[in-house]
Length: 173
Image (cartoon, rainbow, N blue to C red; front, side):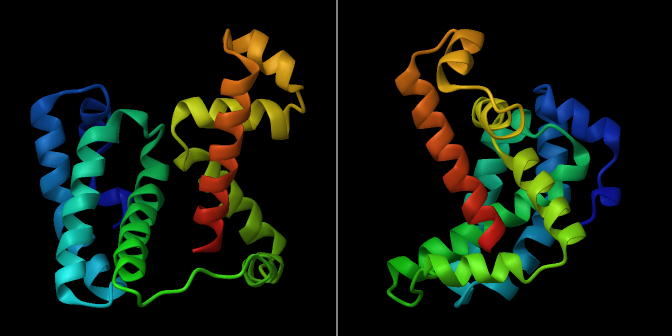
């Protein structure tokens, strides 16, 4: 789906919680989500399930997407994850070995990898993104992050772990 198919005004209205805008956004995104799910999932039943789950996730999390530019990548990663989850559940897909995934990342051109990493950060929910940026970009310590966010060390460490896992998943798919 291209971000051009969705007007910035519609996206922003949906992002801030306008119910009608969310409904129009779901309606606009649905055909592309279904098409992508049919191309990605192993079966038509899985494609339907993945598309429905992606629409539900979009409905629940549209407010966490920071920009229209990140919208398509975020949404398609949701569909990919759902297709993979359904395939694993059915016993069809084995997870990639970590070394295979790392080799795939390192084989990409640096400029593409930078764009992918930026998109992966954008796709993170805000509470994970903030922690990951503070630690991995600003190089703050866990204690500094905890103080800045008013959170416990354990919360920061858990969020950082989850953020890195989500980014790893985003980048290896």
